[in-house]
Image (tube, rainbow, N blue to C red; front, side, top):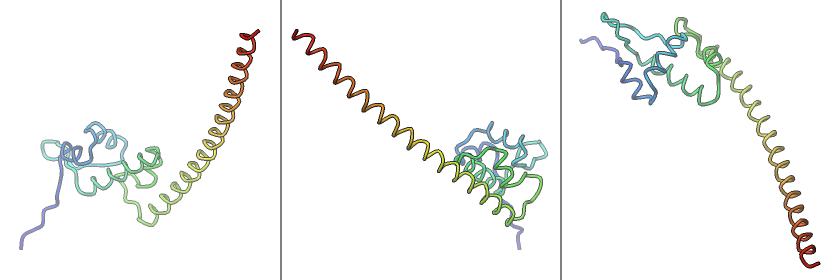
Length: 139
């Protein structure tokens, strides 16, 4: 019976797979969001768990969360967060982000209405000026 070896990745492999730079990965490590292992030669070695955490970080960034918010949701690499706690925090941050998006949407609708109303006024004023010019040219 052979012992199953855990899959691992170099920093370049994981960067290529996730389409991010190695610098970005090192940055997340500096922030304590991931903690790769090290070889005897001090080369970083990433586990499937590291890769999963990086995916969560990237998803959080795509959704507009700050790194501090992402850290609260997924926990720091050094300590394990209970899944239920992680879900609760993610739901709370997600609800707050949804509320923020809904507010921005309302603001954008109002801005659009203001711009359209101003546009209409400007078009009417332009037509009035053109008519006035035509009158002045005839006289």
